[in-house]
Length: 512
Image 1: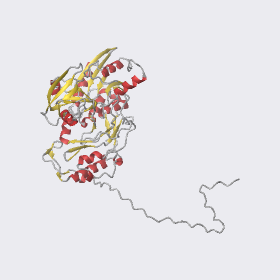
Image 2: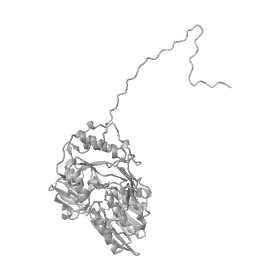
Image 3: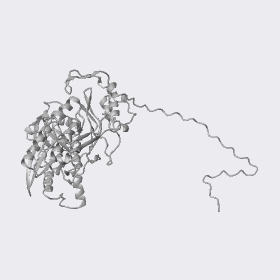
Image 4: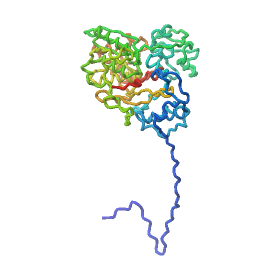
């Protein structure tokens, strides 16, 4: 058998009379030592908490005691931010340790970069929800539903030129409602600036989102019938109505369907949801449609109460509404029982007397009108009900995909909202970072008021409850169907505070 060839060619032997070729030694070079990358220094958050560049004076309304702020520096505040992320952030071990405080001018700008860079399966940033807010303003909005505005909620169907910005709904009694601004009205001009193709974006944004009460701006609107008008609106302190519309429909076959437009999980929603469910129980509804297409979330306790009232005691008894999974450090030292939120069967005192027994409808099926602005605590309602065997049909668009939440933390007048937990239902499911897909994909209908049985999403929901199936376009080509489904799932960006797009635990309250 022939010998196998050598993988490395051998040097040929020297010819007779020749000396072997001496090997040429390689120069000995010592590579330079790599420059060490500076690492962030992390101290315990408690050691720098409340050390403020501009300490607040007076009484803290959350404690009814003097503010605990004391004189410090911006460096102290940035040290606290880095420590808080390291201690409580769900993905603390995915945050770069080379992000240095001295490279950022403010604690807020430093906080903004201290998050995971990873993506979801669909390519979206895993953490799209990291934000800060002025503590006083955040408290007013979350607890009382008050903010500065005109009382018209805008939907950016097309946010870049040619823009398509329409009114999604108006708040009852607001300046916009008093001026008869209606759902579907399209913004054409603001203060004479072209909204559709204009380039003065800063001026448009300043008018759309006023910072003080009493600001006046002119709006040219085009109604659904094509008529145009120009009106002047003055900004004011607006109290948001979390449950502005109720209805009931007799669809035959012994079915009596309740309809509930639920826009925010605010503290005030506890009263309105309780009253609504008592009414629906009294009139004997057999089915329920909850319109949460524009509900970005809020207090998780409110979501738990709603889910309890929809279902029955037999379905919820001993079951978890949501189990909260924190990072490996268990930053708040919670036992498994303490990290489990039950289905709350009694009011918690947000706007109904604590301990008040909540009504139940005893339903086994619920229909939710959804869209890309259905987020966080609203998704918890869907996921928790599915976790105890309640059928939840989604009609509209896919939801936003936020199975995460936090307890906002104030430091020096800024509230920091860093993702601290992932919620899973009683079956252990919580992996919906790309949202829930709709049972029936239906385009948002801006030509009818919310709650109108002719409005496209509500009409399909009533059709389903009457025994029908999801509609398909008159033209049944795959291309047409795919285009309609894509349109139903596109993201209209509602211009609103991120506080209204979250799963919040009230400060000082444990989930269980």
